[in-house]
Image (cartoon, rainbow over all chains, first blue to last red; front, side, top):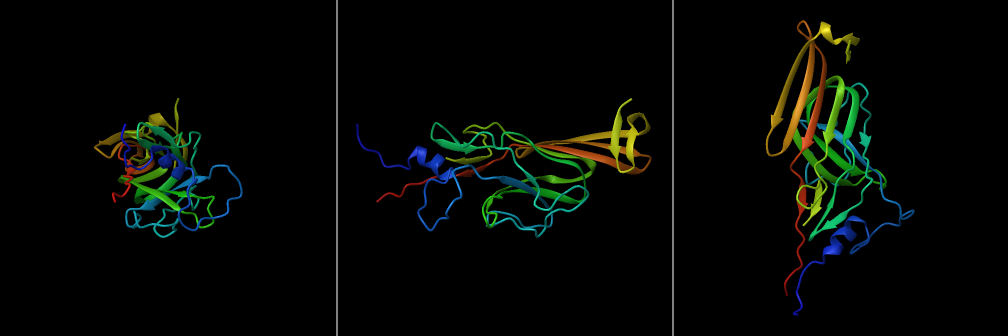
Length: 152
Length: 63
């Protein structure tokens, strides 16, 4: 059997779990997983791949919406399926009984445990408003094909 | 009797006009429910199911 050059599959999960530090890293307070939050953004905002941290610019505001958004349930950690590492929140993200009158179309997922609230990902959807109701984001199946965040 | 949370407090559903809609494309499956009192929107809930995801390709350099 010949040697093969490649990126090691388990390293994809290990990166998601913060086990590699190829540059300056941070001293962690423990080995527990970080808390992730979801914040909503107006259609007029400019969230995207260039984001580095949670940003209040363009965040929605309204009745029962707290700046910074809501915590995400992450009962299942990153998993390797075949050659793809994937991670998906384990429950829907729900903003309950909110009124958000100005149209929004994006959610930023960010690390609320990190000192600077590091940005993780931005997901977009059709422009919406909510009136005295719930806004619910249901997650895709957590696998190598549809998991919310994947390293392939 | 089903009560609906509205901007005017809880109201009997029978007093309101219910309107629904949905988007189903490659990015999302979204459904919304609206309740109207005459010409006024008093409740709107939205349920978005995300389909399109964030993928990063890992590459080990050839040398």
